[in-house]
Image 1 (cartoon, rainbow, N blue to C red):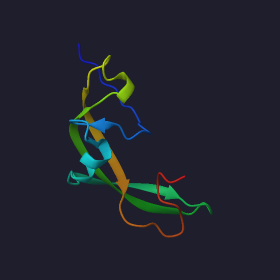
Image 2: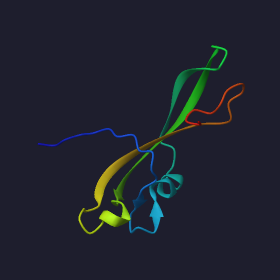
Image 3: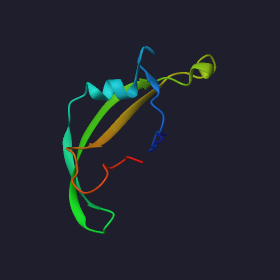
Length: 95
């Protein structure tokens, strides 16, 4: 039986051979598609935002202190970032 999970990561894990991170691999991956969403600014005004969608199968390593106890996981990473600089609001994902 196969299990499927969707996890939002806030840590840029080591990937591949351990010499780079997930973010590095995703920078080198081409955009596979665009997804448009409505976003509200601080004044409640709605604008459209274009998200660039990338995905890639990557070997993700456990934290350095746990690598002896846990294996790398072969995961499909889905990466969405806002295209362009928004006017009148913070970019999606910024604090």
